Image (cartoon, rainbow, N blue to C red; front, top):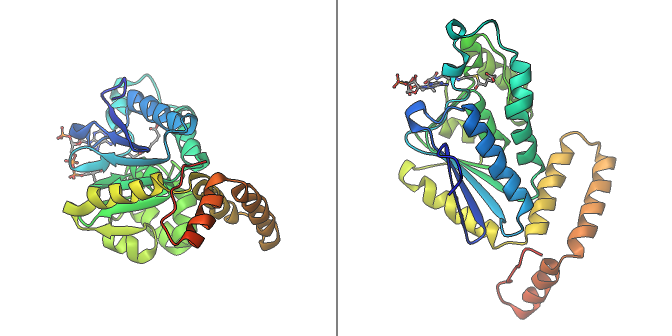
Length: 264
Ligand code: T3D
């Protein structure tokens, strides 16, 4: 368990499962939850025992973004500096998720709105319950996308769909999100956690170094030229080729058996 009730943490068989736990607010972010989530991803970074992260939400929602109760203008002295709150709370966590050289799975169990949607989209593999919706809620309250959403949406969907979702704030259902390539898979509601946990278990018993380098290569390709990307692939393959798991994978191939990866 974590020190904070606003997220629940379990570490089992290499999978760090993080559950956003403010269900009465659809797991909207207050400061405590921000800090707890960041600490959890920092732990995933620091501990070799963690080989995969699974992020989900408690109750009927995944995450409704920022808790607007903490942004009520009637209770504030003046307009907030949201650039400061992004830099203080959201951006460090988003950067940790992208930089973590281990797979991060989001299991989107229900509505994902505002920054809640975009934190899911920053994860490496997104499973969503078929009843889940992704909502770029920002324009409804006079804001523009954050938590990496403008980056993720335009890269994953192209400008037309990215602008359509962000400007209209229309909910996007999980099956449409899969059809558009925004997420990995939409699954039956009742099967979501079993499917996500099975994938997490597979990653956690996989070649962690190779998986992490795979993530880094794909991410680097978003901004690299073909030529520069060949250099990235060369450098990452050099590192992967020195891992114990690579040697085990090749030996297991010749032995005609399932490899036993140690994450080393
Ligand atoms: O501020 C900064 O630091 C900058 C960063 C901003 C990042 C952002 O995320 S901005 C966007 C903030 N989020 C939203 O604008 C979404 C607001 N919520 C909604 O639009 C709807 O709740 C949903 C579409 C997500 C779900 O609708 P529905 O009908 O399924 O549920 P509901 O009845 O609206 O919500 C259930 C409860 O959760 C309700 O409380 P109540 O009436 O039962 O006591 C509702 O007020 C509460 N809730 C939902 N979202 C939030 C929230 N409370 C506080 N903050 C929320 N974001």
